[in-house]
Length: 305
Ligand SMILES: N[C@@H](CCC(=O)N[C@@H](CS)C(=O)NCC(=O)O)C(=O)O
Picture (spheres, rainbow, N blue to C red):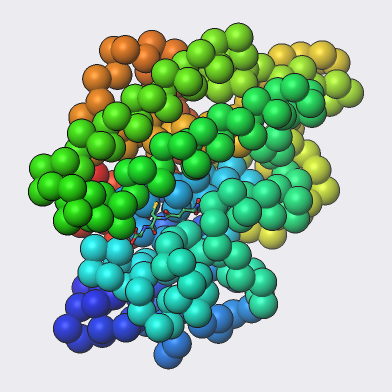
């Protein structure tokens, strides 16, 4: 069994796993590195992540959708590994996720996702339509600025200590529900199967499939799949203007928030029918499911998060 960060045998060594580009393929566990978070293979993307961190889930979904290989470096937030000298060199705030791409180190899920979007254009996370693009930014920011910071581990610890030992849950629920009311209203005119609905693709003729999902045939995405030994097959001839349900930036932020709201914070989701519907779609989408807490290498056994 692999040592976990903070375990007696390896107090500073994170659990390192290689995750291949496609969900459900977990790759082979690697031995702990000499430097806990430092880079050995410069060409390999690395993600410092915690299984239950919703901010990490957002990035894991982006990596999955874009079909990118990455190495999973677990940071045990429950044991305070985020405050270690080694980790705070990467992110002085002591938060996951952190992405390492060669010498580039980025902390903050929004920044990471925008970076990935620009560097790896396959499966664009932003719609071409400017208004929908703006709605994606707004929905993502409602989650990342007006909900998640109020339910963050450190915040809840502070509320427990300074306000009262049983005040944390009510505090978190208040802010989650306030955000959900806003999201429900914001998305009502845009949502389709996913948060900002269907996208009209122009001049697109074919989609390629692998065993698990389709992707858009950019030179980069084709190269990536061929490199990984998967032979993509053209399967759908799409007519100009064909509508396609697409997963966009807003979905990356909503999915872990909805997952945690019902499982961890016991929010009554009956109040939020549109968000419930989106959550069902996320539950049926492999790239999202693979990124969820219970499917991570550092999740406790039989975790339901
Ligand atoms: N704005 C940051 C927030 C990061 C953040 O709050 N991460 C949480 C996990 S979701 C964390 O590391 N918490 C550790 C702590 O509170 O000590 C982002 O989007 O990445």
